[in-house]
Amino acid sequence: MPSLFDGMPKTEAEMLEVQRISATMIGAYVSAGKLSPKAQSIFDALEEGQSLGDIMNITKQEREALLVQGTRQLQAGDLAGAQETLLIAYRLEPTDARAVYALAAAFQAQQEYAYAAKMYLVFLALDATNPQGYLRLGECLMANREFAEAEGFFEAAKALAAGTRTAAAVNGHADAMLGAMAARAA
Image (cartoon, rainbow, N blue to C red; front, side, top):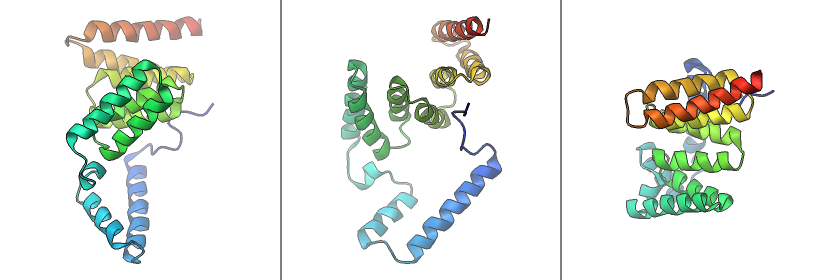
């Protein structure tokens, strides 16, 4: 059975190679002068670290409204609408951990576990100490029957929650998932 992590770089060397190839391809395209002046200015702004939301002058309040709307759609069960709205929020500000988490949750709710898992990994890259990301990633792996990997993420969530105000809830959920996997294995 394919893993949710198939196709992703597994080592730092692989990641650096992906970055090198991407930079070479983009650099060749840009240096060939194939971008319009407007596209070139957007590309330059992105290289400087600006988000699309910043480049397009979309205010923080407007981006926040998108995130709230997408979250409400998700809670109301409008999964496709939530995914569309949250994808826009993510594209406008890809470093907003809340938008990444909500988009991952929309994918997970639609049982699109491969997309959800990758988005939860992005979330954990932005907020590595948040046990919720580990719990959700464990759920995706569990749904894909990658039980050994899921167990590691549930245990990581418990370890990160230790001593926090959310420890009881995180431990309870992680233990329930671990118990369900143990029952399935028996």
